[in-house]
Length: 89
Image 1: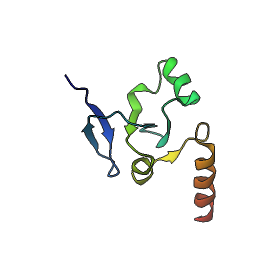
Image 2: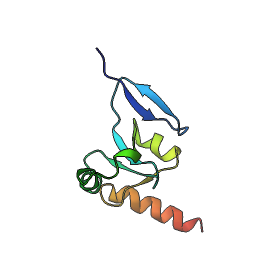
Image 3: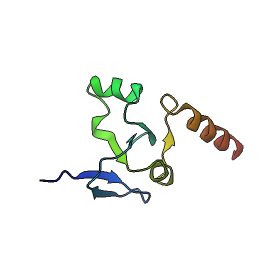
Image 4: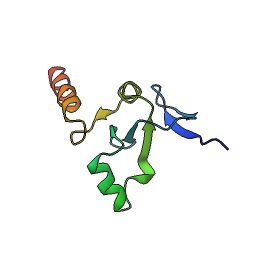
């Protein structure tokens, strides 16, 4: 029996995949990061975050779906996002 994973595509809609996602995100805050993110792991261990957890196959899917990089586990990507966001104001 094959595993199937529900991922979020660049259109923001869920789809079934045979491969697990490479990035995790939080649906409500629209933040994505690495699956081993210390911040996400902390909140998951406390029983939070799980209901809002989403997964992406690629970083590009997360960005196009409207998510921003995590400041903790993806610091360099977050700094780029932050500088671009500040320039657009």
